[in-house]
Image 1: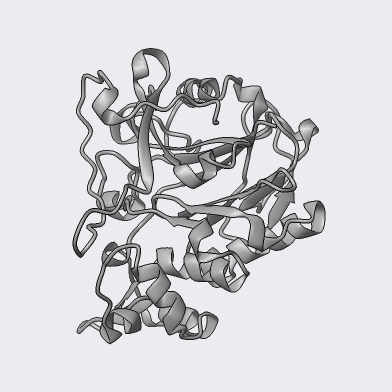
Image 2: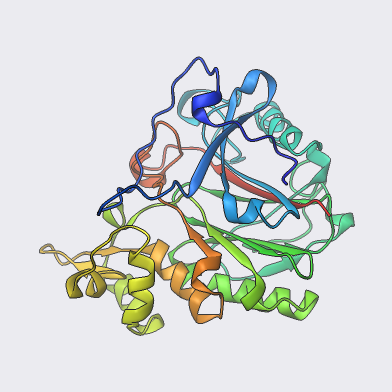
Length: 327
């Protein structure tokens, strides 16, 4: 059971009603929500997302933040973690304090990434606590963090790119990685698993994975060069495409499978599916289908709730992904 107290929308007395645009399930019945909306903080003013599969491991607390519940203002309103987009250090410090409090911790227990769209993964230990917030970060070009030490909060940051949560309940180890299109082509999920295997003995067959809110295929247009990189990196696998699509629709056609990774439009551009690509990375690395949770929430489709680089033309803050071993 996570140390974070879950409170769903129907139970919450929030003054502001939050509406979320989710990817529709096509077919009979209704699929359960993958990302659960919760509330924490003083007066339940801080909404955040969690994943049931990670919660059920019983060894982690985690959250993916929204843009609500903080103190930043303007286009950074309000739970912003970006330090280079015009916010004050005081605002950012308070935003970190509020999230750390969800875990029963302080900002000095958080360790931040140093993201530059690499596939570099850093092993985190107790002396790293507070780096990037209250202590100097003595590393650069780090898009993934791993640890097997409890009470350390790993943190990575987003505004359309894909957050990857990894939990190894057998060896009590966790990973948290940032995967944009470059990281996805570089198979950041696999790189993180390999680092966990080297350091902690992690077997992909035993992990639980969550692919958190990020930009969806309908919103993510790319050019020919990016599309060519993905075509090289991901050999067609109809069976795995069908596994992915079953999360969102009951009937699957050959065209659905053909278009699952990307499809070309009349203007020569492509619509790229980073959710499926990262799902493929984990499946190809040996993670069982049923142990991978894939978001149904797009950052670009929900600009009032989530920061999105594309939806805002770059005028945005950063969301945060946070995870901590509790045992």
